[in-house]
Length: 351
Ligand code: TXA
Ligand code: MG
Image 1 (cartoon, rainbow, N blue to C red):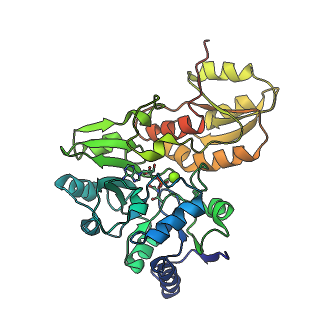
Image 2: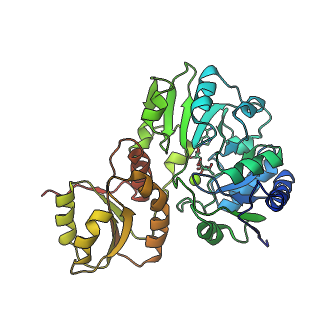
């Protein structure tokens, strides 16, 4: 398939609107369009068409038991496709448009190919101008997983989507770098109006507490599933984001971590905090160093993580090391992504 490219369309200008109208037409007739959002790029198709949903799974190489998020232009549009509640509207008021996905009971207007047969559907209203204009112009909800090949890190810039999706979709829209860099926070509204956090993201547990005190964090957010345990979010059971070389997360204070690195040899790479770089540059084994950004800037780690994992994947390393993030605030999202990328391999050096 020949992929068309639409470069930085500006929805506030006629030319940009024309390009997006063309993209919207592709979506309406069942084609696939990769588009930017503030979290990561999405691989979009018409969420009201079963054939479009099937095409998304094919393009991504994704198992079809892992359901898709439907993207809407306005929070109230969820009425057509889901059973909403007062808590949904409180969440919408606080966080939409923005990087929050809410799981709600699904209505029949959404085909089972989108929901993988579940009785619920994931709904998100992105804040990105291009995403918003595209959904509005399409006039239908857009089903979109992250636009990476299944198993790779989510794409956060044009080069990533071009690498993964060229020739697999009808169109790719370039919208520059994703401002957040990790996928949306996912919450499920339970029958008793409490929230379960299924995937941490830029909207943190503390942020959600503004809306309700009744929040539980799904076990799978911070740990591996035990055999026989049920998954609340089907996506959690797949190994994800993993580079070719094994990634190990070091659980230690800064000094102990440095000592651990000093004792290593061979061909390895380190995802390091900015403050560690000078010391590591003097390491006799010359590890390849990737700059995560300043230690106390999780926003920057989030923007860089997936790019660095893709970069590290290209190197031929025996192993890759990174510090284990905290489980607080935005760092919980990094913890969640990194333990998956590391296939849960955490090293706790004794100093
Ligand atoms: O930021 C994002 O959320 C991006 C952008 C493109 O919007 N999308 C994204 O989609 O990350 P995806 O498909 O890569 O991740 C969606 C996750 C999957 O882990 C899936 O299992 C889960 O949401 N999910 C979807 N529908 C669900 C449902 N009804 N119940 C529980 N989990 C669901
Ligand atoms: Mg994904």
